[in-house]
Image (cartoon, rainbow, N blue to C red; front, top):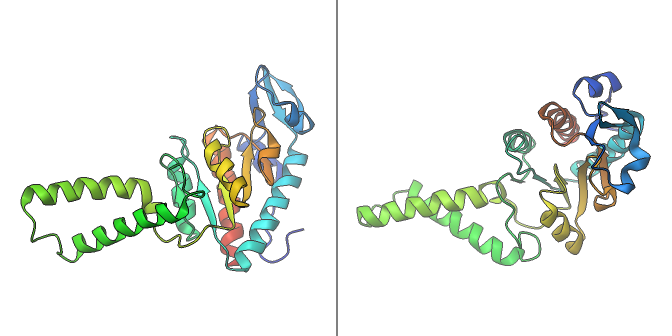
Length: 230
């Protein structure tokens, strides 16, 4: 039950966004059978009534976290979705990973934090003219290093401690993030397409994880929920 800042889920809107289209019949995870309502053109169709129920459960959890001032790390490294993930996370003032997941982000957080601090220090020196004393070649090397560090750490530069939850848009592609979250007891909110084991997530959202329209719909509802509960 969503209380404060309730977000309504509409089955027609979800259908229009293609949330209900799963993978081809050759790709079905046995644990996703309860969420499948049929087959159309050789593609599994996700039961939207069940999807709504699970999504509402996830949104309720997100509402609770946000109202308590807790953080959710957005993870989406697929080429077609990473820009949307980044935009949604930034709008919600949440950390995000949209490039490659760095092994140890959760399990070796102390080391990652040191690298993040180095990135912030170097960025600050560049902005305040602290690198001007170096030669042109050295400054070029610093610029290259900064670019590399930005790609890796810009989305988590303000994440001072482990988040309470992680939102994973593709549990197959970002399986390492899910494994690390489990090890550290971080709650997983995850999109689960018909080829994904839904038990990988504490809060599974049965949905198409490939179509941009579906990913955008899910992110928009999550963003709306977060902004309603800040």
